[in-house]
Amino acid sequence: MNFKKSEEKDEMLERLKDYDKNKDQIKHEKRKKEFLQEQREYGKFWEENTYVGKVLKDNDFQIFDVNQAQEDFRKVMGLDKITEIAGVYITTKFKKDMPVRTEHIERITKANFWNAFYEPIWKNLNDADKIKALEWMFEVINEKYHLGIRQLDFFVPNYDDVDIVIERDLEYTKGLYDNVRNKLFINLDYLSKPLAYFEMPLILAHELMHARQHNYIKNYNFTNPVDFYTLSQTELGVIGFLGLTLEYKLDSATEYALYRICQSEKAAELMGLKTINKIKRLNQEKFGKNRLIDNRINAGFNNIKQEMLFEDTEKRGKDKHKRFVDSPGLLTNEEIILHGQSENLLKLIILKNFYESEKEALLYSQKDTREQIDELIKKFNNDFSTYEEFYNKYGQKKQLLNEEYERLENCIKEDEEKLSLIKATFLSTLKYGKLPENFDEKTEFAPLNLLDEPKKLYSLPRWLHEDEDKNRNHVNTQKKKYQDVFENFREK
Image (tube, rainbow, N blue to C red; front, side):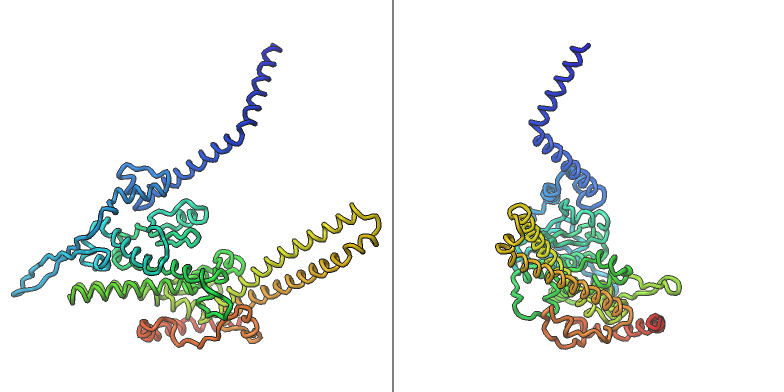
């Protein structure tokens, strides 16, 4: 019996020795197995919930790696074999009150990709041709602005910072530009939407605009004062909406409004709208006037434009708990939900980012200074028998370090006071629809080094001024509708 126990003990020791010898390899294999399992679970999500995943599943492909899945999807759809598209469309004319239908075929290549987005052609294209038209559009803009994006992605890689968003909000994630890895994703689930011939190129133009913004700002020289739009594209202009909402206790409509009207997002939305307007114009010039077709196309474009710019909001809830409902309308968000204070609120957020960044740098310097002081104290305890001996050698250095530590402490307190002021100013501005009277804009915004820009009469670009004028009365009517409630809110 004892011999058996001894044998078991020896065997266990051998296993422990073997594990100790190969533990790094064992850990590597474990991590590899866990990674592959995560990839497979992510792949199952795509197979069950997305257009591209279902296409692969229907063609007996499994997704173990989204990079490989991207290539598999291209092969299944035959995208790399498409060199031109036969754009078939039908026109109808009446002769002696009898409809006469005529079939036309337009040869579409990368050089005239926009013809694929002509509604009578688009509805007759198969999915592969529609996707190829989007790829051609991507390539033209990518090359024109030297963006250096390798390809248009139809899968989002399983990065920790994006997969949570995709899995939670895939229905609302139309596209995504990853400026760290210079990748651009477009959600092909929208390919089957009724207005996809407008919505898909709009989404693509939107995300490409974000790529253009990043490409521009990374080479920008900030030694001179900058305009508000340019500053908004920098790291200082990045808004952490979740953190901001939690810290300032913002409601959903306010958070969404700030997202919609932040300078980079607003510019991308307007670029998308401008792009599909250009596509509409080019196609109408190419294919000529046709009342039925033009009415249908114009109605689709106007629906998108109206929703993007002027979609109404409303208040829901009871008494003091009434809150605005989220609205995509840019002017609705600026004028109604944010009470005409969008630019001031965004500047305050940028100022908040500035002082938080400065405070972080000061804390780092203070920690380094503290460590140097502790090293001197350690030296005194270990290397010197009297304080006088220590002071003669290191006294001046210790005094300077103590003064630096105190200076940094005061600077940190000043930044904390500024952050408290910014929070109070932000919430007051949001509540009362104006900056507090004791807030000195020139002094407080000075650290941002902004150019003194003239006040804009219009929120939208020149080509949309007529639309803004036409909808001004409607926006003012909404403002008046909530004015009494707002005034009561101010008084309280």
